[in-house]
Each structure stands twice: as C-alpha cells, then as structure tokens.
Amino acid sequence: MLFIEDLLPLLCSSGFREKARFFKESLLQSMANTSCDSSELEAACRDESSALVLKFIAVVSILIAGVVGVAIPLVGKNRRFLRTDSSLFVAAKAFAAGVILATGFVHMLNGGSEALNNPCLPEFPWAKFPFSGFFAMMASLATLLVDFVATQYYERKQGLARPIKDQGRVRVGADVPEIEAGVGPGQPANDRNGKVFGEEEGGGMHIVGMHAHAAHHRHSHQHGQAACDGHVALEPELEYGHDHGHGHSHGFGDADEDSGARHVVVSQILELGIVSHSVIIGLSLGVSQSTCTIRPLIAALSFHQFFEGFALGGCISQAQIKTLSATLMACFFAITTPLGIGVGTAISSFYNPYSTGALITEGILDSLSAGILVYMALVDLIAADFLSKRMSCNFRLQVVSYCCLFVGAGLMSLLAIWA
Image (cartoon, rainbow, N blue to C red; front, side, top):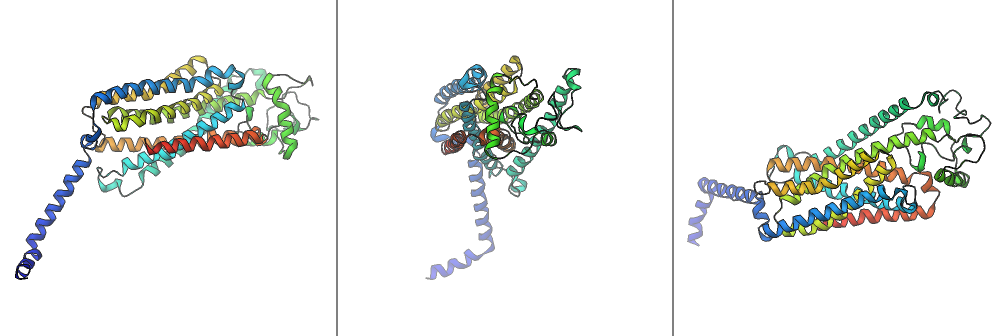
C-alpha cells in the first residue's frame, strides 16, 4: 500500500507523461513504417522464384483469354449464331456487360478508395474528402461529354462524305417530315420501319439523344402488340436485305450511318476505360512477390479479360470499321495487361506499391477507370440493348438477357473475395 502511494506522484508527474507520450508516438510511427513496407507485408508468402513462374503463367493465360474473347465477335460475325444481331450474341453481351459493371463498382472503385484512404498517405487532404467517388463521378461526366462530342464529329464527318445526290434528299425533321427517301406522303409514318422514338438500326437506342428530335418526326409512338408485330415483320428484311417490291425504300441508309458512328465512339471509349485499368492491374500483379496474391489473380484476371474482350470485340464488330483498325484495337487490348505484368516484374526489385506516389497514382487511375467503366456498362452496353425495341418485343430474350446480366455481375463480384 505504501509502495502504491509513493508511485502515484511519479505517475502523475509531467515528466512521466511526456515520456509516455513520446513512447506511444514512437510505437505508432514504427507501426506505420512497418505497414508501408511491402516486403514485410508479403513476407509470409514471399517466394521470388515461384512468383516469377506464376507471373509467366499469368501472362500466357491472360493473353490467351483476351485474344479469344475479343476475337470471337470479330471472327464469328459472319457465322449465323455469332452475328451481332443474333440472340446468342445479345445474351453473351449482357453477361459481359455485367462483368464490366461489377469490375467498375466492386473492384476498381473499391481499389481506388482503399489506395486513397491508405494510412501511408498524409491525413490531409486524403483523409478529409472522398476523392475516389469524386474522381469516378468526374470521369463519368467527362465520358458523357466525350461520347456526345465524338458522336457528333463522326456523324458530321459521315454526312460530309456522302454523295451529293444523297445529301440533296429531304432529311428527317425537315419542313415536310412525312417525305423521306422516296417515301410517299400517303404512307403512314409508323409503317415505314416499325421502330420507336430514338431507336437505332439493329435495335439499339440512341442514349445520348443526338437524333431525338429527328426521330420524333420520323416515327410515331407505337404501343402494344401492333408495334412489336411491325418490328418483327421487318426483321427478315433487315437481316437479308430483301425489299417488298413496293417501289420505295424504307429509309434505313442514314440510320445505318448514324448507328455506325455511334458504335465507333462506343468501342473507342470502352477500350480507353479497359486499357486504363488493365495497366494498373498488370503492374499490381507484376510487382508482387507473393504467391498467395498471384495465384487467385491468374484465374480472376483471365475470366475478367475474356468477357471484357468479348464486349469490346462486339462493339468493334458493330462499328464496322476497317479490318486493320479493328485488328490494331483488338491487339492493343489483348497485350495491355500482359505488358503491365512485364513492366511490373522488371521494376519489382525497387518499386514499393505502398509509397505515397504509387498509392496516389493507383487510387486516381482506379477511380477514373471505375467512372468510365460504370458509364459505358450502364449507358452504352446495358441500356442500349435492354431499352431496344427488339428486347421489349421478345420476352424470352428479356429473361435470358437479364439472367446473364445478373449472373455476370454476380460472378465478377464474387471474385473480389480472392482478388
């Protein structure tokens, strides 16, 4: 009892409190330095020779998955069951859209948030503001702007490239909207092509709305089974190019050009979003020396690369761009992640992924990629197909596509447990 009474004044002294605070700060600093040292974090599974072998396997596996995924729509577009207007392609594209959506929301946005909120970064400003969500939002808005401007540019370019005799035709939205491409004024507008307001050739929707006003003049708002019957009746004509011998055109030429410009923009922006995050995930795998980290990433990234490639290949195929350009886009997509792995492996000896610069760069790029991928998945992949006339008039295709969409998003989200 006497010992405790003698000890109390010592514990309450200012000198002791200063020493205790200094010891606490030193301990916390030591812990912070330890947590920011990647070599100590991966010490339990660190094996450089085994990691190098796994990285080589990852390069081969991801490269093959990417090439096969992007090649299927491009090579198979002349095959009946793999054509871009086939039901199988629409369902597979819905699955791929679900994978891309989950990649943006579950993987990239979460990865950006973790990087920018890492305790290795200074508390100000990174802990004071939700930068990951902000960067993702700005990326989505910037993508919308680029989408709008680029589509207008391509459509204007195609309009200038048309023959003079085509430019001289009375266009949709003119003073006499019922006259178009040889269609007589006596023909009802809603019988010309069986499409609805804002719909593109091939069943897609013009989400950005470049031609909403023109489409409003060209088409009446059909509803119910009659509209679907008109749409279905024209499908063989669209597929095989037959005409009914009525002595007039159905006026699809311009819609084809508009839709082609739209798909060119979609394919290029989608590739930009995919490539930007492919570099990051490739570097992350390449710099890691942990076999526990690399093993699950091989399967996850191969799965992810295959279906991203399928979605991109489908957009390129629908854009109907030149073979050389399509091949270059496909090859650039396929080699980006393996190239990132190679660069990461080369710099792994001196690169610290937990350094301030690395964390900020990774967090910002992950967040920007998330914004681009979420926009592209929702607007240009999911909405474009699921709001189309073709989908609304085919109940079985609706059920299959929605199932594929949710399964794709669910499976890709499930992979976040391991990678």
